[in-house]
View 1: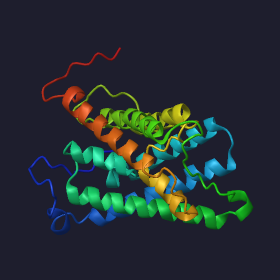
View 2: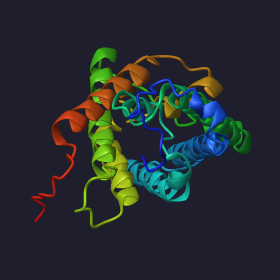
View 3: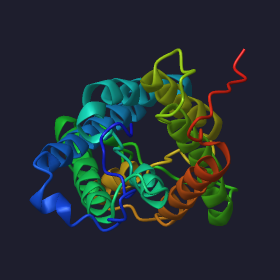
View 4: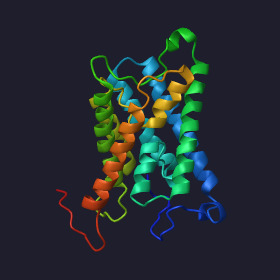
Length: 248
């Protein structure tokens, strides 16, 4: 997910060069727009047509793994503002690119939800469209902490499998990321809908005009993602010349 270079390692944290030097920026933005659109269209579609939480979790996980293979080389396949901000605070993507990514991710999510609603009869949508809601009996604050923890786990895995200095990764990073998303869905879908993605929540909310606890799905994932990025960056990231692995 972080294969595409946007590093601030040269001190250019703002990234003004994106407009003059990066001729592939428009491809990246289209990739993020299309990827988030597909994630919401397919993932939220499963919330309407499928009642099993296991199937919903697998749908989100598999579509993300597929997208990572399809557009990972184009934009890094963030398709999630929390992922983008996590890579920004760890210095792996500059300010301009991260801002543009988040804008097109949100637009893509809204477009995906709009397409989904337009394809379905009103009686099938039934006020749902894959909306994420805090479960009855759980406070908004606790819901935010659920989202924070779930997102921390999810994005920590992303940083780990995208660590370019690791030489011990034997499997598919895309599959690992997809399985991580499926796992946090299985854990938290009963409590908050397991969004772990502000754009994924925003899309259906805009189309259905549903804003209850919207802040939960922005604060929780963003804080969780930032903490995951900083934790991996300063504690676990492989350092230059470090080749040791305790993988059995």
